[in-house]
Image (cartoon, rainbow, N blue to C red; front, side, top):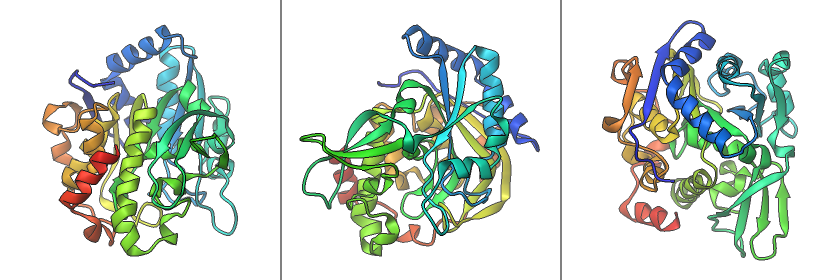
Amino acid sequence: MATTAIPAVSITRDDDQKTAVKNALDLIRDEITDKLTRWNDAGNKPQVLIKPNLLSTNQNPACNTSVDSCLGIAEFIKVLGDYTILVGDGTTYETGHAPSTMQALENHGYAEHQDIWTLVDLHEDDTGAWFDNVNNDVPRQVELGIAKLAVESFVVSVPKIKTHDVLGLTMCLKNMMGTLNAARYKDDATQIMRGDVKGYMHGFGNRKPHDLTKEQNIGPSKVALAANLVRLAACRPPDLAVVDGSTIMEGPGPRRGNVCSDIGGLAMASTDFIAADATCTAMTGFSLDSFQYVKLAGENGLGVYDVASIDYRGIPWESLKVEIKPHPLFSEASPWTPEEIEEIAQLV
């Protein structure tokens, strides 16, 4: 669905993250209310899925979304209507054994607030929608499945601003990878895998980046990941983006980076997730040319990526601009070559 209206992005700052989030949401209250009204009028369930980024069970504040950010969202939504609040993700990393989303939720304080919300493991959910997967290493066309709860709920993507080895940053769009939970062959719907299927997004079967060579990572895998992210967003874009800027990661992300000491205590909100991602990119000192997946999603009508065409409210992003340290591999993966840009455009 093409975006024509000027999107609003709000930015606030507070020592208390829950307060920062609620203030950011309040600045775009009318936009959120309008979107929820249209959601309800379309006959959808009065159900909100808050989708944090809980990549790892390890308690790393630079890696995982703070519970306070999600509490701010839940309290704000409850004022707007009688909505069932769910909090869920599909966790990928855990030291020593298979990852557990429920363990990640517990480790990060989400289980302490089950009077406010219901916790869900999106890996264990039914599948509600499918999209074609770009892959270099499988003989037949593969489709990836999105959790049914993410299809049937009003989805709030709540990422951290984190560095990434080949894409530069992971933000609102990429956070939706946590909703994936199945892979199947397209021609006969034979299921290949259930649960954590994020490896398929990288374009080499189900092999994740640590299973690939550097040349594969900075080349064909980067292109496949970018194209797959746009396909995922086209299939199920988040309805609301709320960026947890309580800390911002720099260095070797998205899991092992460090907290940037020059910026923090932020919250950002928008009903246009591409506008939020583009703002995060500009605020942290990157050129949007390095973020072809964000730019191409915008060019395909999923949002506005030109920061000059965004209605900013609250703190001007320019006053918060900081040059964060990228992942060491990012200098080799960026800038994109003209051939890679053409290839990703053809894949999308």
